[in-house]
Length: 594
Image (cartoon, rainbow, N blue to C red):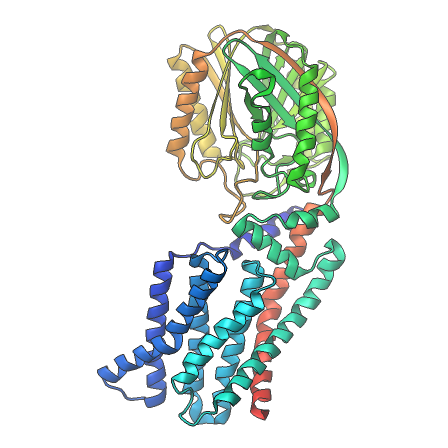
């Protein structure tokens, strides 16, 4: 299972950042000029400086002009085709046409068959445009039209410049261009048909549709994939644990939904942390700092659609209505068993329990194990939650499953926590929120909660991020200790993340806090600490949990989706070159018969 998850990450490498369109246009001109010189040398062999320059200008005419014209028309007719992408597609097509033109001219002395290499080039460029527009641009209805458009532009400029020779038959050349292009398209469609069969059987959608919808989300934020998720999803019953802190200066809500905030971008539950925060921020006619933690749930509990948020928020509101905040006392305990460090904030008859293996990988925890941890905690209190701190991103993909050695360490640590005998005492609470413009922080921002008892303080920093680099976690803990000392406290801090997958977009699937903009984060934490410390006060507290039903991916489906798409891509990497080479040879033979 873990290898499947690791293999799925390979998909991210097929997405790349494109250069500025001005740079791409310059590259089109440079490539075309260079190919023009090579065309001249392939035809005449010996050329002076002036002839070489003139040949380069010819390259502009047969390659750069139609490439730029095709890109501009694509952008003007479909603004969804951002010019950065349409220009890059123009650069690729210029390179494809140039390579085949050059091969034809260079091999022309070997026989008349070499002339037909040009038509094979038209076919390959047509296929490039068609499948790029279909899969990456998500132009399902107009891909054929625009692919034909660029083919016509290149054909007109090539043939207008003389093509192979002054005596070339214009009509016959066009027939060969169309014949070669459509024959290659048929061959590629046959390949995708056979590759699609396993995916169609397993997921109910074809490989072409899946790749197209996948690219549509990463590039445009499209949600077509949610329709496929709906088909394969299943309804489950889960719960949300919720606690409220109420004071004159502070109003905070801790929310622990037992779902997973994925799969990525704006799909499924990826934006649920910010959605929950926004929905509850004004509950009870007060401005609430809403802390949305990462419950013990894996990718199997990814909601199938962003519309499922109403079920989560509805359950939160039901739990909030049952709360009766009262004067409170706190006891804090922390312990380590094996690789697991557990800590518990016990307030009245409730417990907020969290787990980490930092600096070792701290990944998702199986829902069944989470329920077992909560039941063990409830032997000592009436209300408890289990939180995965998710605070050590090392690049290793793993999850804690029932029956694993780590699972037993977590169970033993829970027992040890509640047998520590720490005494409850009155405490003061302060909280603050910030929303820094940091790429690795989602819309729910940074949340800081301070708990003080006498000269002792505990700081809990929650980042709406997909994990955190262990070294940066250590830096932030040290920073909070220093900030507490400045306030006159002995401060112990911890950093947790929500594991939101909202920020997992074209940059890739691993975007932990601390890979960039560390200074901005530390500056934000400094401000948060000062704001929260000023608001320290005694607060009233209560907690509750609520069960609810929600449609999620279901057992093994998340891995099934990723592995099936990854398998299709892996097959394409091997089969596509073979099909293209075989098609090129077949086209050369067929064109020779026309």
